[in-house]
Image (cartoon, rainbow, N blue to C red; front, top):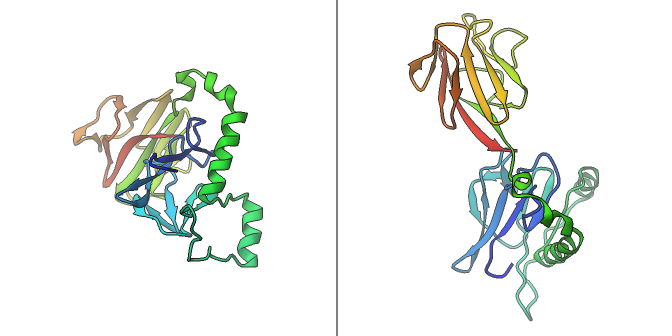
Length: 234
C-alpha cells in the first residue's frame, strides 16, 4: 500500500475492483495513520465487516478479515527483510468449502498488489469510459427509525412502490389500525416523489396533502411509523 489509501468497490477506478452487485461503487478503504492501518466503510449499502462484525471504522491487525459483499480480504503487513511473527489464521475444512462455494477472495497485501498490476494491464478499456458512466448510480432507500414494519430498510428500485398494510404494498406496515394504502412513491431516475393517500402523512413534520419530491435526509411519517429517506450508491 505504501502511504496511499487503498479503495475497494464496484467502480473500475477503485484500487481493488469487485464486479459484484452486492458491492457499492465506493464501498470501503484501507488507510494508514500514525503507523496504524485502518479500514473504513464509505457509506456502502450492505456494510463493511471486520472479523464478522459490521464497522464504520476500525484499526487492523495482522490476519484480520475484511468482508465486502461475498468477498473477503485478509490483511497482512509486509515488512522488508522480516517475517511476520504471527501465523495467518488457519481455516477448517468447512470454511474452505464455503470459500469455494461463494467465490470468496482471500488476499494479503502482496497478492493485492499483483492483482492491481494485472488489473491495470487488463482494464485499459475502462479508462476510456466517460465520467458520467463511471459515476455511481444512486437509488432511494427508506430506513425505519420508529414504529413497526416488515423490514428495517427498503431499497426503492422499482418505478413505483406503495406503502401500507395491503399485501400489494412493497413497504408493509404492521398493526390493526394501519391503513391499507398510505401513499405511493414514484421513481424517475434519481428523483423520488411521494403522493399521500390518507391524511396522517407528513414529511419533515409538515402534513402532506399533495405530491412532494423527497430529498436526501427527509423524514417521512405515516401514522406512528417514521422513516428516513436517503440516496445511496448502488
